[in-house]
Image 1 (cartoon, rainbow, N blue to C red):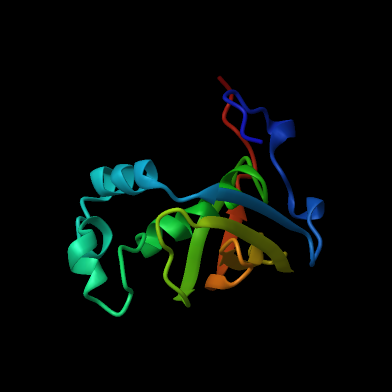
Image 2 (image 1 turned 90 degrees about the vertical axis):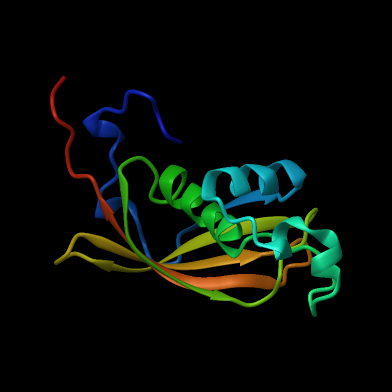
Length: 151
């Protein structure tokens, strides 16, 4: 987990990881999460905030923002795998299914490859709903902080 005052020994290195290693984080997307995401992002698209409007679309009701759902991947990468010192370099996302208010999502990150020349981890990323159905799939490249400055 993240530490408020991390030390150099808290920093992961490529040697701490192997292909197949994974970590997950779960969260229910409720009204509070949706409202906070609107406040932070400014994205008040009626698909996310207006039930009457959204009910008239092929979604049949409001859906969560795709990037709100994808943000759970950042939680895994920043706090679990690789964790403290992770540097997000890239992320691809394929949105496969809508997420509705009340859905519980599980974000999973799996080490696919270690690029020792670049010092990067190549990760498979996935977010699934409470039924185990994938809602997002993608890939990430993550670097690692190598050292901390003194003081």
